[in-house]
Image 1 (tube, one colour):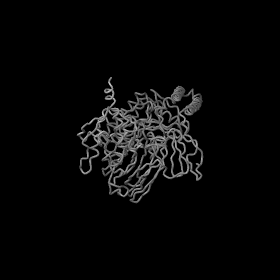
Image 2 (spheres, helix red, strand yellow; image 1 turned 30 degrees about the vertical axis):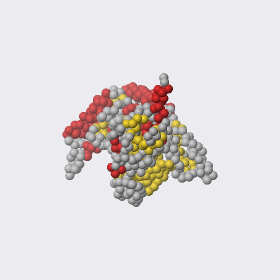
Image 3 (spheres, rainbow, N blue to C red; image 1 turned 90 degrees about the vertical axis):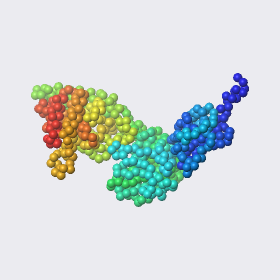
Image 4 (tube, rainbow, N blue to C red; image 1 turned 120 degrees about the vertical axis):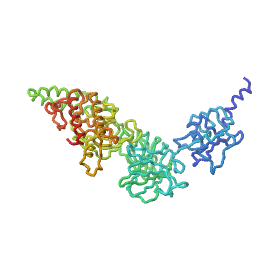
Length: 620
């Protein structure tokens, strides 16, 4: 091969080192974004880059080359001339564009000149849609040009939209330029989530504003790997504020990239406005500390607020030492370092509790059966089946409960919906349950008694529902919390309430003025059909409900009926009651009343009583 040919082949690689050492982003609303222009030493001239093969890795290199090393989110902008038009309609585009052929940055290079490509050729990017651009998102944002990657999360049934808005409410005295900010009109609660922010962040400053007659709250929470830091608020402000902007500073110390959630909520009143603006991040602490930064525990975090430090652990872990330390004037911290210890996933205590309960129940039951053997021989066989059923549950508990276990740190209990013999039912919110990426309204059944009977009832209901697949006419089990008391059963939330309540509200004489809820014959028929489908599904799974009634049927806002409350349900083709418990006498079949026998046929009898409830609008 001739020397001339070798030089010709190497020439594109030599040119690479001469191009891209100087770079700028004209037209952008801030130094962090705009159209990409590079300085071409061979001509010399500033030139655009056509966006062919332009991707996020190329954008990362541009952001790094411009000095935005804290950017944890970069956006490769295609058609940058359209997104960033020239001022006053002028055309400041260069006459010549240079197109790096087959540009493939890995995303780790220090500058574009380090990225491999086949050389720089003249290319006429005649269309605005062909220019490349970038957005280097560092988390700082004045919201004047766009939302900087901040986005809202909607809670099921209550989605209040955060968005950019101009003055007059909120006023523009916190901002320069257009005066845009992120705000929401809240009547319930609204959540705004930042893009991922850099782990080197130690202080976040932002302006906040509240307007209206309602009492409102603005809370700031930290999220790492899409999980809340124990759900605690880093900062919170509540009350009625004057129509002025205020400034908050929050100390942050984590060892991972993170997100921040701004949660606006109306506490008392009808509605109001909550806004934030001018978010800025710093690698320096909010206040100068004389003490050095504390080591971050594995599976945990450290938050700083002036001279105070607060330890926390991620969900599934717990602190072994006190969580707060203070920086003294001599440069030392009070207290000792701490560690986050994993909460045991060993179900031995759970199994032991079940085994002891089963043993005690079996022993007591055996004694009673021996005393009454001559009078009630069928009770002996029934008790044996009962003990076998309990032992079966005890053996299967570890294997079957583990996939259902859900961190209680991701649950926020709300108002009480009802109360039973062993538990209380709450409306609650669960973060990212059952595949959801947001907060979901759920119903949480909390066990309030720790007796063996209460635990066994809870345990049976949990294992019975665990074996059910999702069905449109049966309330679904979403998860459970059984690693520590109080135990939770997490169920699908059905917003319309019970069928009994809906029927009674629709009674002809309930509202003489005619303004009550009116149910048509087709709707009443649909209620019956929905319940029949749900019960047919349970029968196919060999489950006997034993407590079918309109009070245990829930109705959605779309008038879909779902069978619920499996506290008395049992698995099998036939079940004989062996214990004295309160019974729904008016819904029970004769064989259940007189002999204590339950089958799917006795559920059919209860279904007949439910049909009577439907046609009589909840009257029994």
